[in-house]
Length: 403
Image (cartoon, rainbow, N blue to C red; front, side, top):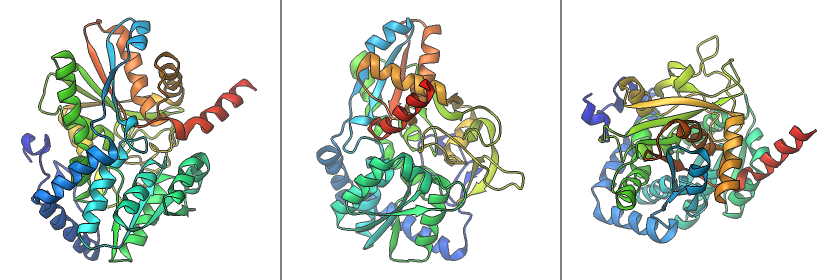
């Protein structure tokens, strides 16, 4: 595949971004995916679909989300200027709604009556439940038992929106297992549409999710030019599966002077089972129907992962990120739980903005970088979600630390 194809274009006809992506699925599932791919391509060529989605972005989601200069935090750090892309101000509080509106609108166009989704932190589940309610679709959400406990507020929100929350009880009982169970239910029900939450999975999901999330990067690029008359020096975003990051990066891929930096969950350290840094510490492998970097166990299967943030503890990552890493177009680093938690409080106390723990990882990297850079440099952080969902968890962590 050419660099042009990867840098913001379609994957090849088999769904590959370079060596990564594809469809590693049985023939029966491939037929379902091919149906979806055809329907998606047809929708993209339909002006009425594009117009309706744009209407929903503006009048339902509240787009465009603004950019914001963290003047207090930047002054305290004494280096580069930190700016935020405020996806936390979207309806329901995260970037996830960009993708779920697109997919639920596509499901309705295809004549589907039911949707299913996986969720970790719960934001994708909430956004899917809202999109389904808006489109008149039945909705079920698979969520790991561990995540149901630590993200209880979002469970309540999903149920209020009319969704059934189905506990995933196998394995580590977190995001991977939620995906496993959602896929199993989808495979056995031809009338069900799977609203996948990140830029992962078999083709066309990585491409489709990137397309819907690319609105982040398009807006951010135009907004930074309007505010500053220039592009940022570095764009940063947290990476679990990688949808908010690929959405931001999409706006700047062709701007070679802009560094792209994805920030993975370093958890408690580099030992096996203590992190979920697939790109930094993993190796190529196939999971959930696609090829990318992944954390493996001794047998070569999906390994144990961990993160303080429920939305980042996935053992693989979107295939376009894998390709961007190998090309050297994007850099990938990791930050620890403690660094993310410190960033959570720094933004809250200096700017009056409570970030999601997922987004706090990207913010933590910006906080580490800024003091060593000159004040005329600009770091743009995708604040992919707000921290309401994490308040109870963070309060519990603080109480435990005081004992």
